[in-house]
Length: 354
Image (cartoon, rainbow, N blue to C red; front, side, top):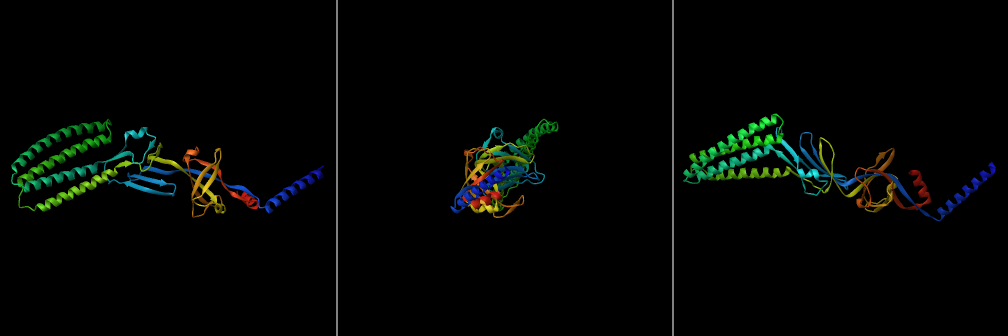
């Protein structure tokens, strides 16, 4: 009985070997594939974060090229009071369009500097006006009335600030509301100084002064004001990409937006297998637990070999259409890349390598 079973096994093995030999001689080609896993990424990711020194850092990661770009930093001076607030509508949104306003940064020092420059400019302009005309009595009367008005305004703002100071001490109002009240008081004091300087300019003006110097000084102040106003535009933060808003709880990461109009599959490939792949070609992918076959385009193969579990590999980036498959960024999924048909010996070698 044992001898009969041994003979049967020999016959079956002989038939299989003969069939394989025939297939090899006939150069029959069979399908084969690369078994691997895929990391799913969005085509772009925008991260808005807080830096270690309090600055606001905006960066866009482009997963098609594997590079970060569009990096910008809103930097603040030491001692500068700064507040950042998302606009109220952002809380109810799940998707942003490129260019949408996300938040606004408030800098007390920058606003104070602009107010001071405007005040100095008004003083210089009043000086220029006084020295350019002999009819100064009307200007003097106007300046005196403005001083009375600004002094009354200081008294009003002082009362409001003292009230806000007490409410802030008791934590009934926010730091931002306290800063606004303080800034309004300082602005009123600056306006009073401007009015006093304008009166002084009217009383002591002389037509013999060099008016050209005053005009140049005014132009210089106006130029600096314009530069500061341009910097204020950087304080209005807008989304550089369109995509889904990710709600994550972190003290450093303020906002994440994923552009999932396309998805990028990041996958390790054995170096020996890369000979079957060409950048720019269409590739067919079968993923575990997903019935549909996925079609993508091979964007690139890395130019440097890495060692993964003792195997030499190159990383490939494949772009796919998310509308045809149910996947989201962050997913790690197994599968295989379907390759062109190969001969029997090539298939056996590939099977052993996998």
